[in-house]
Length: 161
Image 1 (cartoon, rainbow, N blue to C red):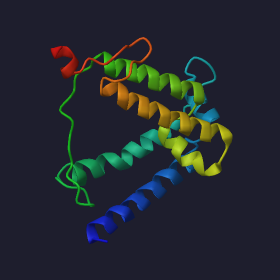
Image 2: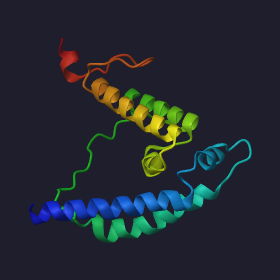
Image 3: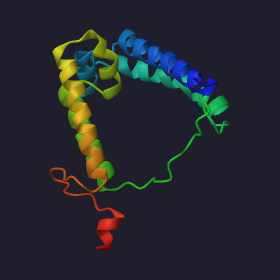
Image 4: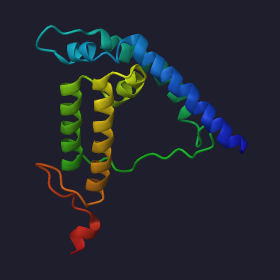
């Protein structure tokens, strides 16, 4: 195994362990806590805002002082930045669908992955459903699968027909 592959695996393990531990310790993996945070018109629980603020307080200086200046990650992979900054129907409907899933389940994908080790049926069902959604979304983005209310994605190939 090459040195860069070993570094990539090690960085994945370290960042995954830190992320998962942070999600569990902060309470972001607890659906009732997340739903309490999202319930801004009822009995609102602002504690997760402090978790997010704390994460940004740590990440922001590291990003500006270290990451932004680099062209490659520690693993050797080249950083790529998106050039698509258009706010279109796909972005809006994707956000609506994501928000509906988050609000109904009380799980965001990251905390759900951090909670999967607990093995509860709701987490396993959420992660399985999330994976099915990812597969369908990729098919939609390729122009091969319609989504309710959205229809087929208009790809460059389909616009030329």
